[in-house]
Amino acid sequence: MTKMLAPIALLAALAGCVTTEIAVSERDVAPRTYRPEATTIQRSVGMLRKLVVLPIVLQTSPEDQESCASPCDWPALRRGLAMNAVDYLEDDRGYKVSSMDPHVETASIGLEPEALADAARKLADFARSRRAGAPPAELAALVRDIGVRADVDGVVVLHGSVTVVTWWDWAAIYATFMIATPIVLRANAYLEADIFDVLHGHLVWAGTYDKALAITSPPAPATMIADLFDLIEPALPAVFASPAAPAKQLPEGATKPTKEVVQPTIARPAEEQTRKDTEQKPPPSDDAFPDPHNPITHPWEMGW
Image (cartoon, rainbow, N blue to C red; front, side, top):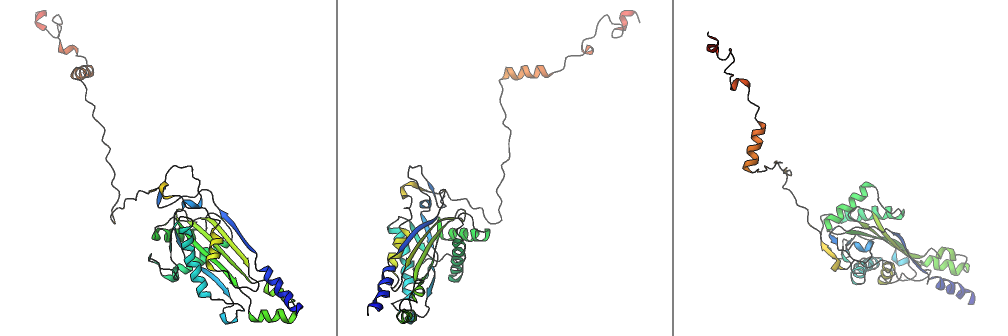
């Protein structure tokens, strides 16, 4: 009996390990929807006051919930993570958050659910590479398109995986007296949050949550989200955010008019104008005042 309890005690001890960290954090982050006022408050990702959360990308194992050795309700887990992400970022960190996840009440931005889910998968794949800054041009354009449609400063991608012990794993532990323990060590819950700024389409923040599960069920979604986003800084207070001036839209087919440059006319005093005109006249010629002693101009003086 003691030999059978030993593996259980070891696996239960392993189940308490939780690791969270900030994997990416850019310092210079600019908002899109407002103009920040001068303040001594320092913010990086917190400058992105308005966020939209894409559909969560979550891999779960086993797919057959009946095989789980401990309770595992995958739809409830997905729904809980999506809802708690919005609640925590708004209530505990001061962001204004909307969600495109089908498990949360959403407003349409003109994209089909399949397109949003595909965008989330593509951005999650890029974020796993841990390359801060600019993604490929196609992905950067995708971020900007979603952000402009949702009228936000940042796009949030939640993704991860959850693996729990199955009845088959549990049977192997008992049958081999812990020889099969390494099989069980793969049971864990991993969750990551990546935030892209809409102004440039760059990855500016990433945080991770990693917990060994061993023989236990996944933690409550609220607990996972709180541990994950406990690392993120609060949003810039609304008092320091002024509305951005909307860009003027021209009618379709219209072009921006060009201004005609007119040289200004400078009025001059009358006497100055008279002096200028006099200076500009050519000097009189000799023909204008004939010489009376010149025989050419007065031939009668010569007796002709």
